[in-house]
Length: 208
Ligand SMILES: [Zn+2]
Image (cartoon, rainbow, N blue to C red; front, top):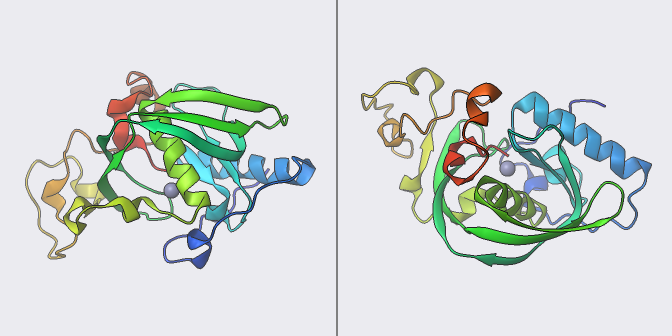
């Protein structure tokens, strides 16, 4: 397995639609395993193949309380319900977070790494991650869901735990909009994240 570079906005691969996988063969599994390794290395909870420059419908997802990554091929959001506001980030858009609307739950289907059809209903953070990753396969990024550019803000690691509203002079990046206790910092501190159980409220952990 190897860690691959993650493509960043505005790389054109992030805007293309990935193709359906016909056979889950050795090559597809190798891509998926490299994606898992890349996701772990980056401290994310999900990754789509476009993000490593491969236009095949493969995603990997791993909630913080899960021991193993899920590999999903040809994933689909079958149904979705409800609306909620969440904070979201993306490994392909480093340094930013945004507030967007996501579903409360999704009905999801895919093939797993053994070519078996998986169907599940997801809520909370898993639902958010699945919507985010399937979007990637369709060339869609979370910033496309922003209602206003004020809903996108820059993350300054050194300012993350300060209460004061530090201005950095960039009108698109208001540091004072960052809710200091919703801010990450602990992307890789899984001990802390486990307490949050991988459900809904820990939306700031969605860096995928
Ligand atoms: Zn992403």
